[in-house]
Length: 260
Picture 1 (cartoon, rainbow, N blue to C red):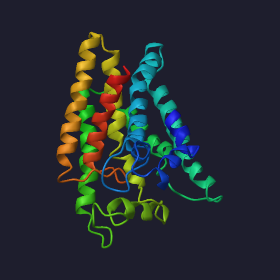
Picture 2 (picture 1 turned 180 degrees about the vertical axis):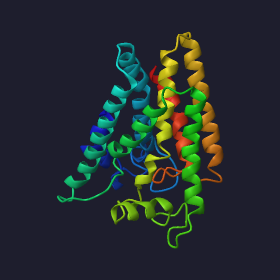
Picture 3 (picture 1 turned 90 degrees about the vertical axis):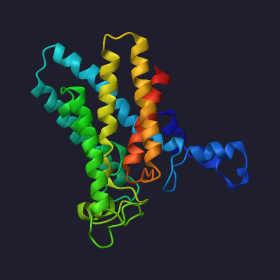
């Protein structure tokens, strides 16, 4: 949250002032801005970790409610209302800047409304099934980008000429700007699902060392696989390519280990 305050206050912009070129301050400043298209900066990890940490909190919150006697239906009703509110707030934030009604859903809150609900629906399933769903969502997204054949939107890794851009045009009638796409909510659901799994690990009665080792191994595997894939599938946060989702998921596990 402190990082977000730094962004909205405009402080990070001063770090990349041309007068700072060639200095360590400028290098730090670049890490506090999104990559233009291909690549990964520290700032590109803020949104995945936000979605991941929401997932981490879910087993603690829901298990407490289930143990106190709440039924699954009651908690589902609550989760559904929360998702609708997140979607509404995420959409409404986009209307503030233009000062008029606009229909864009690339805001983190709008994206979280989807990832939170999907993660909730499967959180009582075995870990293997949660992992399967997370990777199927990543795979489905990857295949749609690769094989979408609509003319003008059949370049999977080109800004505004890919399936995600077509989806935005079909959904809202326009592009959301900056080449970000609403469909990111589908592949990035993996971050929230993996957060749920991490929360379940933390709640487990394992010894602390085993918990840390398990999450550290998951993080390292994510980094190796994600960066390894980048030679074939570029790391692009704007459209949440599979390599981006996996490598950022690895960093999420590593980050949780460091925080823990």
